[in-house]
Image 1 (cartoon, helix red, strand yellow):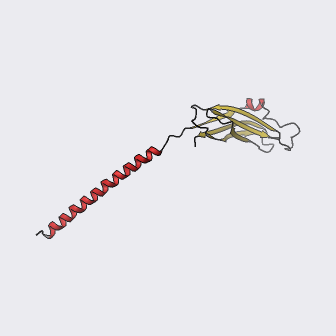
Image 2: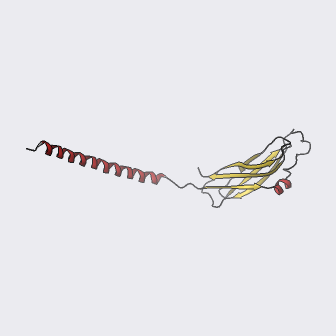
Image 3: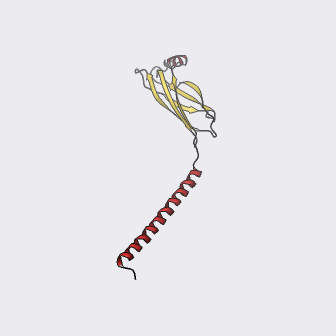
Length: 150
């Protein structure tokens, strides 16, 4: 017949063996779950950049002077510039493109009216559109953009 100490030692060995088996089973399950999850993941193509609409462009497109007859801020005659942006690598699908203002220089004599957005989006590129209207005077604008597949 086993002594009390021998009985405790056998119980501990049995417990450690059970815990070790549970730990190894848990690790194997976690690894297979990670492997399965990795198969579901895909690489997402993303690109970003910025464009400076400089003083020469602003002047050439009358962005730096109010539209005749709208000096008091009445009316909505848009003045705009479009810049075509080519992606570095063609997207597999038409991406979502977000555009925003990074910096701008404008007259403080009138209200500030400016829009920047992406349009005519394809897998190869898009048009970055800067627009103002009425008596707003723009001298310099930097726009940033971000394109990604959904």
